[in-house]
Image 1 (tube, rainbow, N blue to C red):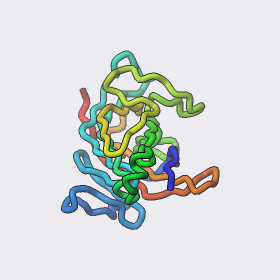
Image 2: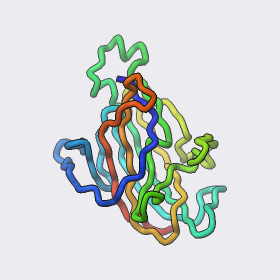
Image 3: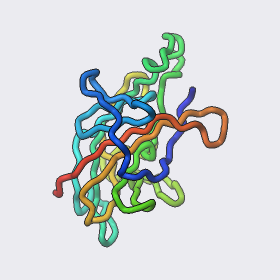
Image 4: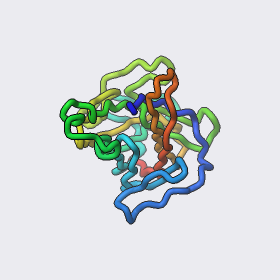
Length: 197
């Protein structure tokens, strides 16, 4: 199945921890959900991702958040594992069928505070979905390709309330099943309390 861009619906922080992982070299979803912490390799169907570090800042390069907000910088590594997980043939891989198009909206930040307690990276407008250029060479763009087995490390940057200290980075798989909505797959969450810089 092909992958679709994902825009997640707001989750609650009350999701139960149902995934165990460490021993296999990463965390896979169990019963549709996988949860980890900074440094854990989260293993989805299309790609693995790892939250390397997180920080709350007053600004990020030339980007300054609105009043009452801070900038949350989440450094992640994403690695294309689609061919291995889909058990693709060498011919399919050579034809580029294992390439994955990544979207900044694959990831969102959530915090305790109701349905509006969610943010997507600043490289996409949350209302219009207009894409913006990164403000730093370290920042991941709104859309970028990952070839078979390619990995990329960069910053996901979010504007968040200044008084919040606990966050969850969420990613949900979406499969192109021919319908407009697609089919939701497993949900992954990485919980953390960032350090202020």
